[in-house]
Length: 357
Image (cartoon, rainbow, N blue to C red; front, side, top):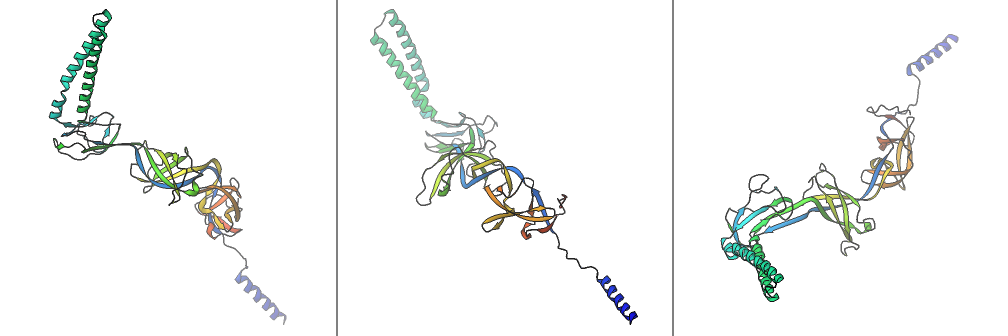
């Protein structure tokens, strides 16, 4: 009997040894963390709109004449669309010999010179007592009439010239044959200066108290995120709402020295309505909705702890934390979706930071 009992005991011991000890081990969830830090943050009111050149001029013929496109001194060739143009440059000349003859510019120049000399001569004679005031007045009237006749002739001939009103770019140049006869009113060119742009935007009525002249704005091309972000500023704000749309209008100016954005482009405009130079800022995407509160997870000694937050300024990507986190807290930025409070975690393989800290 004793031998049988001992054998049974040995059999039980051997069986336990083969199965091994039973230990309840919870698997650790891989996460990636970032230290909470201070950064600048801004809050925006966003709008869209089409930008226009601050200066634009359409040149039209003021007289009938034969078309002659001029040479661009920058290139040595005839002007083409896209050329930079200087204020005062002669772009198109209309040749009209009949008008030139009618104006008689040389004759009027001679008449003006003669009347001017006669008037100056009569002034000298008056001082010596050689003429009367009536004779001097007659000489002065002749001089003034000659001056007006010369100025009018100059104006008439100037109408045969299409000159650039301000420095900018030639953005449209209708095609005409050389020496083609054009009537008055024909379109000759369009000049734009878009080193500075402007845009009119419509904003929701509930934002009217947050928008004011002088506020800064960030402007980007709506269809191409790779373009430069331009700086803008609010110039004017309407104090009333549109009766139908319940929106209000604001006008802004945009600095475009790099010419990164062109007139006619559709842009996204972020108007800065509040900003801080330094705040605890975290990615908006890591925040979990807990009904009446917002929560995130931080890691302490390999354990994920849920923290409830009070938040401040926010934009599309970031949010300010007023309470619930401290500087240098290790915030879970990947893998937080499946976490529960006090879940065991391990750092993702691409992070070498000690997870037990």
